[in-house]
Image 1: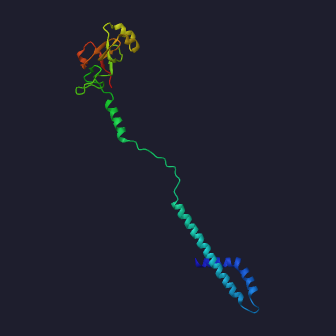
Image 2: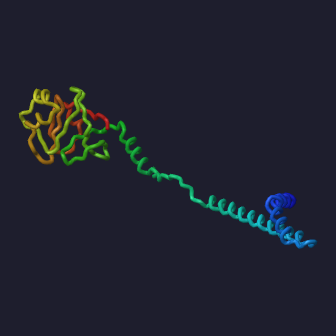
Length: 207
């Protein structure tokens, strides 16, 4: 390393220092004197110091650049993301599984105050998914209404399930619920087991 530095200094001196030193030596040296040798040594020493200073500054600049590069914050476009709530997802899936393909047992009919849903012995709910096996129609229900006594089979045969036609035979009565398919109809006020009415061909169409 030292040899390479000396070689480099010699090259710098030969290119930049010697001509000037020779001129200076020629101008300053008295006739018959030895001042030229001292001038050359001084110039060589100054050239070495200048070169060392230049290399030192260069190394410091390189070091500063490296430090700045290390500590410089990268400009990444970081998009925020949200974690999905496992609890809410599991709850909805669990609710879907629990309600998938369930049938009422027993099947209840009820007035407008009876809650609808899957009926069981412990959870007595009026089935809201009734289907008639005789006419293959879904059973419609209307809260706080009762059927007029003049209703007959042809009325439902011709008008089901259009409410604007059916309402001509619907009478307002709070607490009751009017049920009907295309072939049968009932007005119910209290929770009733469907098995008690043997004429109806209604079954739970699964929830």
